[in-house]
Length: 341
Image (cartoon, rainbow, N blue to C red; front, side):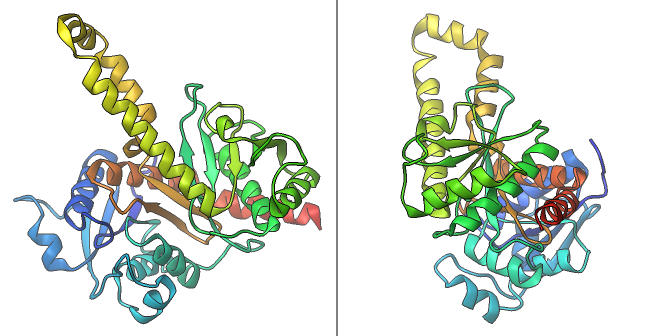
């Protein structure tokens, strides 16, 4: 299981189902993963929804006077609400009282708070949100970034995303010489808008990554690429569309497979296989996305996240700490910077 001393700061007030689902997922993670949970938010609300006889071993409630709503301007809200749950959670990481932070609240506010409190890694202009998708090849995920942090991107940003994604894929996902792709409307080098054409040139010229060319939409889940980069506008649409498709397929399987006596018997026989299908396709199994490029481990979840997703996100945060993601990004990116200078 790795280290059992990992401390995760949780924005208990962030998300559509906060704090109930956040607390439920966090308590499960404490029990099953052996992590220490720091729940940041309104103590009265948090304590009110805790199960009876909940022990405080490995659990701490850190008071926060405010929360940032989903409809608030992220940067202004982060600056104005200094004692908000997301700011206090970030401060715990900054002050080394926590090893990682997770929030299912306003993603823009989480990014703004991370930038203001944790700062960027040297050499990184814009952090990116990276998430892992399953592919048709079992055990071969693909990382997509950015999926929402930067609506508009300069070509240089996409090149930096590729470098960070390559490092993460190699040292955390265990991919040897990760294949990098640029999401585009065609596989030919001449396809795309001005940003895509310039980014393609930068990626092709970068000898520190294994850039294999453009990736079309149909290539995303093919397993032919290990990392695919795009701007956050396209990436966020892609993320939510893929999750919706996965949900539709799972729902169709639930409705159609048990039909009739033969279907019921077949479903019973295939139950272990169907469970594995769900694990590969259900976005709740992946939980959150890592904000790459800031000086701290920061995971961002969907606003609609419920307890299973919260648990999965905390598991991913623990794995990131155990695998020394931040240290590897810092050291490897610095090596690449030195080699290119």
